[in-house]
Image (tube, rainbow, N blue to C red; front, side, top):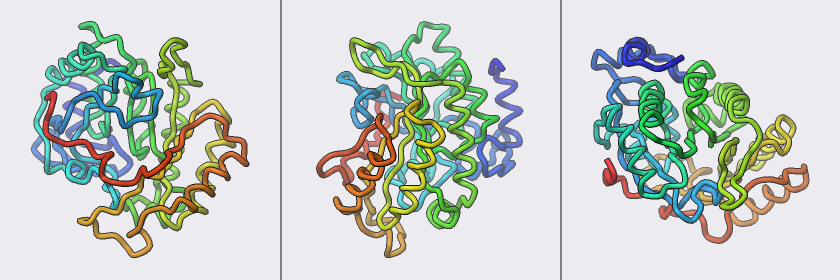
Length: 307
């Protein structure tokens, strides 16, 4: 489907883009569960070096951070924009210009960070930018809680999918993200992403990913069983046709209302056991974090740069 302003308007009037299916009239001034109306809101567009090496490279990923989120995880590091209270309004035409400006700055790719609740508008902006000369790979960077029908709007526009697979346990996903159906929805979404992007393809000269899927899993304190089930599912389902990025950067922020069991960092021992498990079950392709990775240094300044 080629996106048009008319289709965007229709989709926004009764929003079911994400699994929340809140049916908000976002065109008529209402906001969805994501905290956003139909107007695109962004917080930053700049070169970013905090992604996996094959995404950031030496030149940086052209990351566009969108305001709002359909998950609202209680431990979210980007909480100041995820809640939807911080951001600047962007027209689809301006967003297309931003993509082209990042290309001119030498970005390795265009990295759409939490854009699912603006998916039709973003698809339209990508279409405009490609017509005006955008040639970089496009990365769709998401928490994984997506509707397959919505993702199909991105077919032919996105080259690399970078989803999370956060939880296997419905009790854990309900407690942390208010989404007991998280695994069911995210697993189906990753299946659609893999259908579109296929096995990984890399640039032989730069090592940058040109196409494919990298699934991220953030290890949570005390949740080793859940992490192991996630990794086993991914390897059983996709083998080495996807990359798996196992993250240790969980950071309990002081303003987050966390239960005691989540109000600490993951220990090196906990993380090491998860990495050993991944190796044991045969995961060959992926990424891990070394050294002191937890902390607020992964949070970029949401200062509207590049908007």
